[in-house]
Image (cartoon, rainbow, N blue to C red; front, side):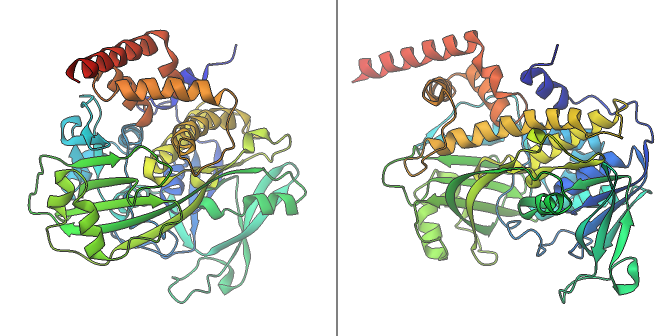
Length: 477
């Protein structure tokens, strides 16, 4: 009997230590040195004699922006589900992050606002608040400190196959002026032999092209148009340990989109506030700091207070046209010794903060797969099945919120209207009821599967809470 999606998600989101690791292969190759690739390399270090990360960028030794992650200046949130996995993969991670200046926030230093009204705290889940480059640098330092992991600064151009399995990665030099020195091949092209390959090349992954060119199936790509623009500003923070470390303020979608659909703020390292404002509906990006400050003044007080400090750098903008996913689990023919992780599989509207935590749960799925004594002669079907549960969960959370916008027109999943009504009832009750908030946030923070909200007891409690709130409002009027 197969596991339910909720049970699979619970198994992958565990905080239990990694045990029963053993060497299964010689060399593993990871394509991409961003967060998803680094976490995959960390997992593979338990099961491969050597791990090679192939990355086009020269990876900086400390926190810094780089060409391969053009969105890294925007707000990134390590949600509770991802936070637990990083602590699991790198014991002591939170203490090291805090020592470097990150804010490890409690649930009582996080605030959410719905149309200006503060939501009740769940009292259960916190965040690691930092910039994306800071977090990635810490993960990179811990991963590359492993004795069997190294980086090659070069360009992956294709795959080599032996029978029904991947056997290597074709590599070439990087021609960008800022690129570092490559490894192997003497400046020409070469093949990096591999007993296992992980595609972590992000949204622009070429794996589908490579598979099709080699005679395999390519995965279909599902897209949902979202057309979101983000503007992020950094400002000096005067309190080293702020009472409010992070907040999200969102507005109910309307036919005429507001100038700010949602705003997120977090206290990060180096005594800074990072504030991201999101808008949609074909509006011009928010680039002017005066307009940025004015719009923050229309949000809850923490936003107004934060932008009163010294501005640090320019307002950074980023546009994302769509959410997308590649359904590798649906392919009937798929090579052995090959998987894809992170944004290369699915990337979502960034405002929901699922990207890094999804990558961490993909790493957990890979670890479970390799610790289950798999037959590497065949496709990694068990991994793909587990990974699909994580992707489905994140996709459901993000697309459900996007589909509620008047300017987004599907595709709508089967039973959408009923599912939407259930979700609205639970979301409404989570504003004022702590018990419902705990269950709701456990899903949105990627600690539990969305199906956990379908429990009759949860829905009944939400209906009672909402009915009581409406009666109270009528009484006051």
